Image (cartoon, rainbow, N blue to C red):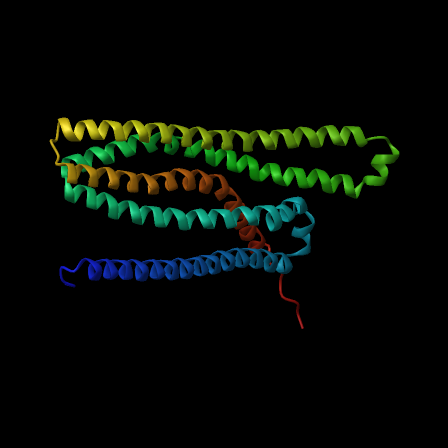
Amino acid sequence: LVGGNRQTLLATALGVFLLVMILRSLVLSARDRVVWQLQSRFVAEQRTRLVNRLAAARWSDLVTLDHAGVTSQLSGEIGRVSTATTQSFQIIVALALLIVQCALALLLAPGFGALILLLLAGIALPALARLDRIGTLGQFSSSGNAELLGAINQLLNGLKVALAQGMGPQFSGAFDRLQRRQLGFQREFSLGRARDQLLFGVASAVAVTLLVGIGIGLFNLSPAILITMIVIFTRVAGPIRSLQQALPQLFFTLPAYEAIVEMGTALAAARAEPATP
């Protein structure tokens, strides 16, 4: 389009590159603003809804309510809901990229592309198999946070009596046991994620090596197609890595949202009767 002059071609290519990078930066900036607005508004709406239902509930139901659990959900657990929202956005983006890149791989070389998809699925399978256990750890973590806050509130409410009766060491021991149990849940989750990432890195390297050998020896691909497929493999591995990291985090934090919804539903059922004029 610009002719055969090398300087004109270089200037045009650099100009197009510059425009594309500026456009990319603008798109990323707009995306970050939209994601922040969606995330912050969603979390604020959940917190406001729970507070409104607390204010509208009957006193007889509020007396029996677990105050430590409410405090935990309005403080720490709502932060986990924010994390879950972020992970949900990452999963949506990763799935969209994965679909486009897999379709491109199958279009360029159907057989070789299918082999790539099978290898990637095998790499991601160990992490996906642990999602049920991760969800259970998330439930334990949510209940553990409420128990820790309950123990602190119990000490503060009866601090004078506890100190007078020399019960400080007993409280400290009980709190330490709760905290160590909570750290155990988080430790199992973190070590599992680290192990999955290590296996993904090693398996990806092995898969690339196999793909080069199989592509040349079995499929007899041309160097151009082979290099393109390897590039696509590395690009597909990125969304799969994102899914491998975001899905466990989502399952770990999802129980916090479920607990908030459950408490909100219970408070809505305990709505106070309107005052008679």
